[in-house]
Length: 632
Image 1 (cartoon, rainbow, N blue to C red):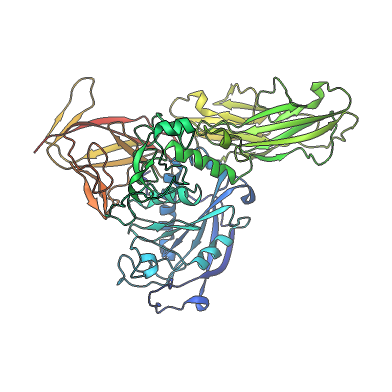
Image 2 (cartoon, rainbow, N blue to C red):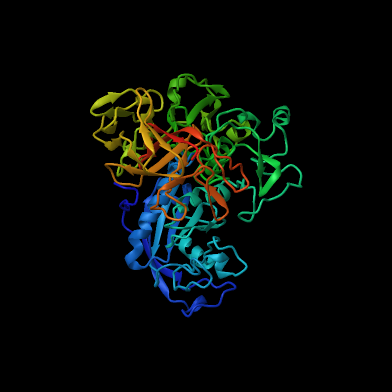
């Protein structure tokens, strides 16, 4: 399927409610002809669960709604939403921590198609559900690309999703528009159909969720920001320190210095950021917080891991510990399950680590032979992710939690009759990717630990230690479809998943070259004496949007989006790049982000790689071709 195809929503609408304000947002602009304020007519909204990984109260909830989509255009909203979400899941750390996030769609039809002041102040005002508007809300003194939403209407939408509060949710409002625009804050916005709009979402979540700052060297597009005049920034990814000073003081991103940057190049010290061109430095030449389409670098990624994890509880449940318990029982903890790796659990008795537990989520106290009296048993759950190097972050409550019990050997446990069944587990309704960590939790009888056995394509899979998680990435699956099964030993209770181990296929299309050169053992080479275009498409044999990416000369991977002015147009490479709305796109060779960056043409041969990320999270092997730019 092509990226524009919409995936089916999982589950029926959860709730149908009214109380959504309909009309155009009124700021400094003249009011529309339609009713406004409390006199606006009400429209029903449907809350549809899109991705539910746990109770809303125990997850970070992303609520996606649309504005300016009529009833007939709601399929367009679903397709736009899916493209935004799949783009979000293609970026780390959202890919690895997707299981910490619920996604809800709130579908509400607008009376009219489109949003206010799109694209100009003289454009029509429209009667829509959320009153979205460009130009900072139709303000002549505002910014055209500042797409805002009526805060009361947005709050009403968010309140429709039960179990969510301001502390555990983020609302994203998509406008039915192809004009570039968006904003961050308590309510994030983005245009639904613009070429770059799906990249606004992860950037704004970097702000609202991660507390990250912009790494731009301008405030107004096309105007250099001048010199930084303040002291050491509070921002974790901006500094005045040199690399030597960071190492000596063990400050800022000193632990990452010299590492290959996820966004290209190496982690170091690059001048400009915080809207200033000089006198302040950032970790990477380019990253998501500087240029849309590049990944978050390691510094921003580490902060986001802490913030995402801080929105949830690593320990989801445990043996009650409000009173002493006997040593004749099994104690347990239920944990979260990141898509990208297993959490670790360390058991201790009176401060000493219990050997041989193998990261299990249960501990049989009967096997310990405790001496008579009282003892303290603890289970420490932590996230060993390589995305975090700061011990303070790793040891924080976001990534490490400890549960303790007082064990009194004089007490006797009245065993409950608890059937061994599965409780929470990885969603079985959609295929899982070949690198996913699949989980299956069970109930917890007092006198035993249900054992989970795994089979792949009918053959047993060894999974010692924590048998609640199975890392498919460690199995190095062959391409194709597979069947994964989890069964509680001694019962007929089982779960089954379809495993998609075949990445989507990427194809490229170039404009006609001067000549094509093919040599044994080398990628095909295309020779140009001027601008040329690249179109990337992704095709998968399963439903879901496909993200395509490319990179030049081993630099950071960029998400392919077409062209800024038209998502259907191919990407244009030129010797010095093309300036659009104060930003530079498509310079072949050394990346150029703003007009005052070096525009020297990079003639010669360049390696262009391309790949896909499909809806199951599979990343295809990178393929490449050569593009040689000769002087005209």
